[in-house]
Figure (cartoon, each protein chain N blue to C red):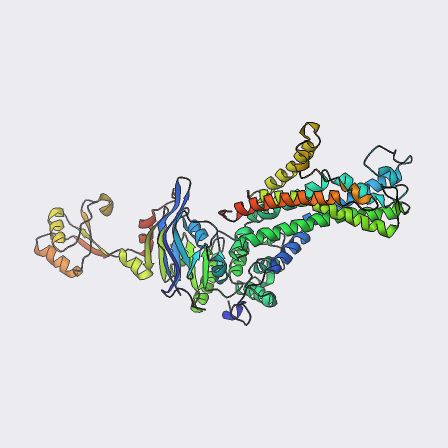
Length: 322
Length: 289
């Protein structure tokens, strides 16, 4: 790592980054902050603007407004200086079907003016080795399976040493075994100090490897931070089952715990109260309730899992964000 | 997944960029390793071969004044087969193959999603356009030479070889006539450079290579149709196909370079205009393919 740029320690920084297609806003004024050395999960359902954001970060598409800085260089102005240090997999692999895996990588490597031809053969071979494709390097890409093409796409991102890897849905089309290999690869690259920006619509796939994450929903950035921070934002809740609803609400309010009045919170069960847990310890809450004469039939503290938080932020089901 | 030997070996990155000839080499090798390219070159080479075989097999021989220019000459002199093959190929076959190659340049990359990876490498948009245009120009030369060389070989094989009588009445030897053949090939290659620039420009406008190819080919036909309408006399000198068949001046002694020059200036004009348009279009285009 040269570490010359970005004294503020950010690999990617955007401010008010926006992309409009006609009247449709695909990316709506997002402020991303990706620390150097992090493994940054970029989450969101299909159509939430993740790939469009990545296209702008890589200078493939121009922002309608706002700015993006990658490895200390403004995009797309400093593209020629920045991109040789960035490896990318964008919206699925792209290769010439009539060329072999090896020839495809060789071809893409010639496009990088900083990639020396003297080491090209060795670098292509070791990139193929790294993703487990050595045995298929001479085969035409036409004959590759989706998973093999995906691996070749990742190999392309590893042709030269990179400071930043941008991987858009890297586990697409991979079987569980391949998914695990990609996770291991990301871990080993991160251990070498490479910043990794990985997008996914499946939280479970990347939750285990990320140090940081951001969540997109319908073009907006709805959450961002370390994984611990994101989990923390979903404060623990207490679920209280009691017939004395009003009295209980009064006690909880005195303890500084806002009662969630919406039906959704307690479901259709009018006997259950949901409230955000304040600084008060759960045992003191119960003691206060009992002291006030509230009949406590059930009491539980629930902490939202990251997945629940993700679903709460982005909605559930197959509705593609519009 | 062994540790980092893949990427932190010696000499893995250059500190200064090269001028990027490697990409041109790669482009040419991809173009000329494609089966499609060889199929087109073979089809072009078949044109003079078919003509020569047909003339050889017919008992009466061609009647002077009918068929393409020089057709009646080839029974006496095999060296004319190349010229006849080129004259037959110019209106459709050559523009057809150039249209396929030029139309495929950018749209073809977009279609197989390699365009975004070339640009992220980063190839540089202007450099990619330049490389694509140079490769198309190289194909123009290869296409013209395919007809010329196939014609010369089949001509020598099937017909007598004799000194060539030029349009000016002078006679030149076999060696000199080979040079004239190559000059004609050069003339036709230059003739196709304007069309190549148009094709590359159209290719920047779409992600569908077939659309760009068809449009380029249709434009070459339209240009030739307009060139044949006497009512549009004023327009003719501006049509990129206007000088396509005007290489007769190269068959005089001494050679008259006028038409070569006029043709080159016209093609250069088309190149400048369409290169500028392609640059304007491609340098700021959102790559969403």
